[in-house]
Picture 1 (spheres, rainbow, N blue to C red):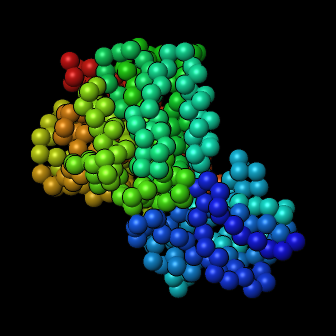
Picture 2 (picture 1 turned 180 degrees about the vertical axis):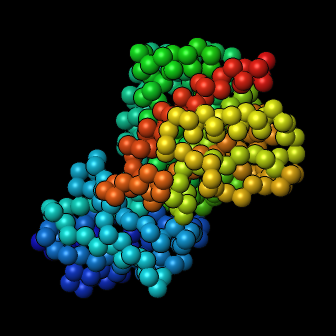
Length: 377
């Protein structure tokens, strides 16, 4: 067979520059109407048993070049099980080495969570008794913005993911959280559904997901810089979610993401908002401590720089929601590489670990329910 590399599938992204025997030169395609790029996902056929070197030539100009050192690309033969392969970053070029075991293999920046899998998730969750499904509106490409509510308690908990579509670990996290919430035998889930009404948007950026973007929607807009003034023309996804939040109110909110460079799971909070309250910040720290106690995958030593008083960026979701609603809000970041505190040499950070962290986060929410009730009571 002739070596072939293609990416026209759901979420695909790569451009072939040249093929010379077993050496292939590639480029990642920029997000539409944007300079952002880093996500790649493509298929290699006709190379069984050949020692391939796949060179991504424009890696140095990507959105987060600090994400490439110590990074290893993901490969799969069945698109279910994803493993890591040898990858080097040198002189601005990312070189992926693999010897395919069959005539067809997929290569990706992280295990993809495609729109087809998203539709399967939506169909499965919407079929459960006690789940209310609604579309919050249409995206610029005409896709539905899927939204679930479950539980009937007074605390309003919002979980939303994938404002940045290339951060596919965020929807794997959602799949794990939803599996737990819908388990009728799980006592934590039962208590959460009793005490809370959960509002869930599993994918806030369907257009970027399908287009194979790293960070933006169909208009080339970074949704997580639109929360101060979303518009129907540029950011209808944020406009719809924020309107629903205004309708329901928010007590607790988690915005789920991935970080290219930092090899740890961590939280970013709302410390710099103008109206910050001591009790609000104490609950954020209580949640962090509860999550540390429930999984060795989470830590509080590494993360982003904390905003100075009054210097929070209110265009970002976590700061805007904390300021607007007085909510305990946070951004969860997971690694594209591995969790250096608990490394896995075969898979690195993976879909399975993302899903398990989703379950652990629900356990931590449950742990702070009495304090959250007192704060909002």
